[in-house]
View 1 (spheres, rainbow, N blue to C red):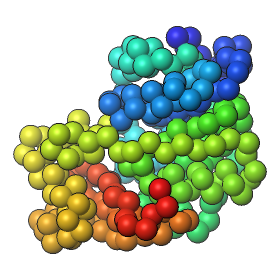
View 2 (cartoon, rainbow, N blue to C red; view 1 turned 90 degrees about the vertical axis):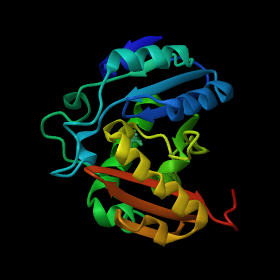
View 3 (tube, protein in one colour; view 1 turned 120 degrees about the vertical axis):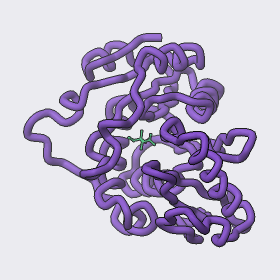
View 4 (tube, protein in one colour; view 1 turned 60 degrees about the vertical axis):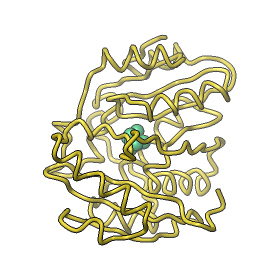
Amino acid sequence: MKMARTIAELQAARPSGEIGLVPTMGAYHAGHVALFEAARAENDAVVASLFVNPAQFAEGEDFALYPRDRERDSCIAAESGVDVLFAPDASELYPSGYQTWVDVEELSRPLEGAFRPGHFRAVATVCLKLFNLVRPARAYFGQKDAQQVAVVGRLVRDLHLPLELHVVPTVRDDDGLALSSRNVFLSADERERALALPRALAARDRSLLDGLDVDYFEEADLDGMHVLAAAVRVGSTRLIDNVPLEGDPR
Ligand code: PAF
């Protein structure tokens, strides 16, 4: 696996043939490995990005604390068949004078958008940058971030980007908790309490979240993707999850 720290290094390392791109913020777990494996199976080469995008964290969010371990991530990516890992510094993607943003207006407003203003503008912008730099045939995202999938899907369609989005099902621990890089912040007791989230979604029963700090528990039509989505805070950790609802075309 080649490591590219700059755009010039990425261009030099860009593989030939059809590329599957997996955009990530690192702290890899089995959910990321599922994305790498899907990309590996369907493309000639796999490029993953490892970039904790500062712009998508608002003031007071966990940007500084977000787990980072580039060495461990490189090993997992290499073992999972990634050909090129693009891990730029923030100044590479947002050099001084940077001022261009892409806003997927309506889809960015509800659910996460209501609690994290500006979040999806930054996600859409960094994804568009990665699509332009890597020029993938396919890009891979997890169902766990359903609204992100909808926002990026709309970006691809609205801007006529020549790539397909592939959505990989949420990977869960045996007890049902969706894998997330933020799960490492949960104490044993908080992890136990966090299990209410997948249980409430599976039972479609908000009352199972009683005692947790609930940002939302809502059915949503995300550009034709019907989900029951929720966000809760357990201690200082914010978790999101969703389940596709009947009638969802997938
Ligand atoms: O889902 C994530 O890890 C991030 O939002 C993404 C898509 C890599 C953009 O920074």
